[in-house]
Amino acid sequence: MQIGITGGIGSGKSIVCKIFSILGIPIYDADSRARQLMETYPVLQKQIIKEFGKQSYTESGELNRAYLASRVFPYQQNLDKLNQMVHPAVASDYKQWVKNNENGNSYLIKEAALLIESGSYLELDYVVTVSAPESLRIKRVMNRDPHRDLKQIKSIIAKQLPESELISKSDHVLHNDDKRPLIQQVLKLHHQLIK
Image (cartoon, rainbow, N blue to C red; front, side, top):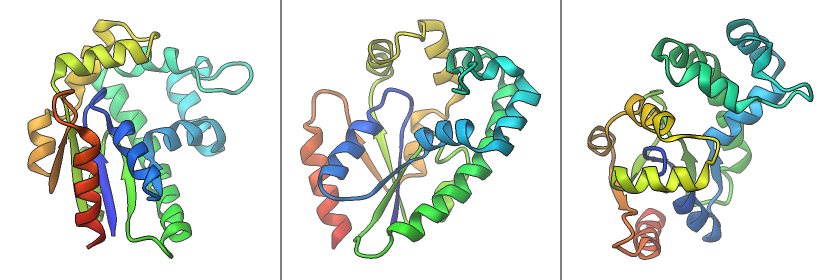
């Protein structure tokens, strides 16, 4: 089985996936892989430089995340262009990862912020949304990402699907609201999935 885990920025997808990882479940982190592919996949690098400029990369060839974010997140058209470049590369990379990990595992997890928006959730067997109040999500992101300001975080949230829409397309919701114990929720879901 292929399980998708999604949720808005700061919802706690990574924490949930760390718990699943401790349980021995392989995790494909689509957002991290996208960043890696943008740094290591020459065709994608050329497309990004052509569209957003040489400043998209540092002199050492690393992705200039702050610059790219300033060019992409405030403008929906630019975000759409970047996603159209990155999503096919991630989809191909994910398929190869599944082939490498499918034997001997009850299920695999694909973690992605844009699981619903990209349409890749349609290829999965089960979708889980990690839910958290927006104010808590903002606080978490500000603590986690010092390079982002409040305006940028709110801009990212505004461009993501509303949580209610993510939940409507999901099979299960994990509540990461600092009120309900998250580990117990993940363990319960894990036991359901291996059955």
